[in-house]
Length: 181
Image (tube, rainbow, N blue to C red; front, top):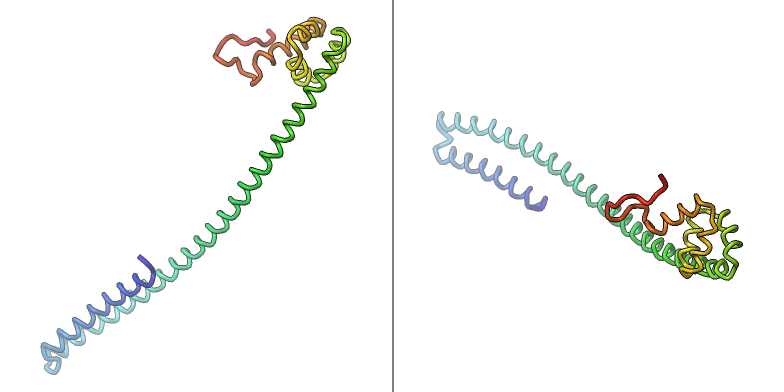
């Protein structure tokens, strides 16, 4: 229910009650002593209704202020959410482009290592980060990568093998880990 409608309903209800009581006491004959007493009884009731109406008006004003603040805050949050979503989309596109370029660079590097004699490629791969060595070897043809893998240091060969078997770091299906013992 809107604020104006609530206010009208509350005001008209309280006012209606007060007028009904006033009319009742007037109809009974407010000129006699009993009517005068009844009219005095209405005054405190009217005062209480006015007091309650003032309290309700203050509460309604406070609710209106809270509702307005909530709407403003909701607008700010929605605006920031739109900005964050746009930023996320931009970052996702840039990350995909960067990963695509990185994958292309690894593919080219893999071709270079594949063109080397296996012992020379293994000697260089022994000095690289194991993840990069894994990427390079995984892009080579199986016979070429096998020849290079056979000449790697044992620790790196095991690490590369585990990385190739478990690219996401897990064992996949709950099988026994292929990692070093």
